[in-house]
Image (cartoon, rainbow over the protein chains, first blue to last red):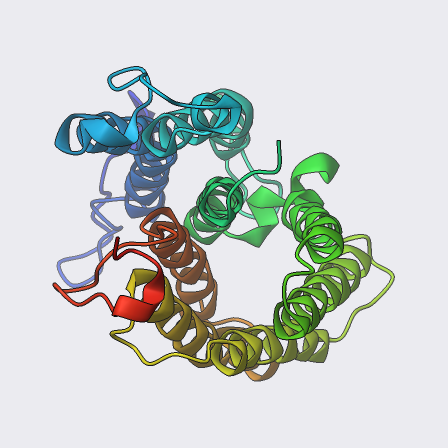
Length: 113
Length: 193
């Protein structure tokens, strides 16, 4: 019997009952954690770059521009970390989350419940 | 107009950080989900190939010592070989998990080249320290693709491989052409007036 997406345990006799929780529940929880981890990777990297920029401002040319050449402006390590985090968050993470949410054929997941 | 060595190292650090994040993502979701899109499956082999290509460019310009030239060309060859083999694996041309041994060998060669071409001791300067540290990190991390060759189903290998590249990125970002390490800087390192 199916009520609001959860299976109600059916008593066959006092020793044999159906499972109170479906096997899909821990799987869904794991999937939720994976989505969270993928979505967090990019922002955490960006945060790491920002924290680094504040911790070592002399590694950001914008803060100490005197006497700096082309390459010092082009490559600023903390900003590079921010850029990498943004690239991952914008290019890789969205598609991965989409694919994680999509039911996989071999696991028998069904989005309609 | 030539960038300083530290600038080139930071650029590679940025690339390796992205590489590490991609590998971490694959470790989190598993290869089945990660490889659902063809471009994503080809991402890390392509990045390795690209790193190999860039290392050839560096090889051409880093002619200040024979040792550096040989080391950079060795890294270029190792990255190109590992990337090409992995690309063939994800495209279905190669099937055996033992092809992961190529990546393992590439890591050993790369790490050994780091260790051999650094002529100074650990505390000579920060760059010398990082050469030793990165070299040993890469040699030890060869165990991850080695494990993946023999026990391909264990997730620990993917996690370890991903963590290796994030760690290498952090080490490369810490590199400076002339800087002390734990308060040590040799007078021969070029920093003294």
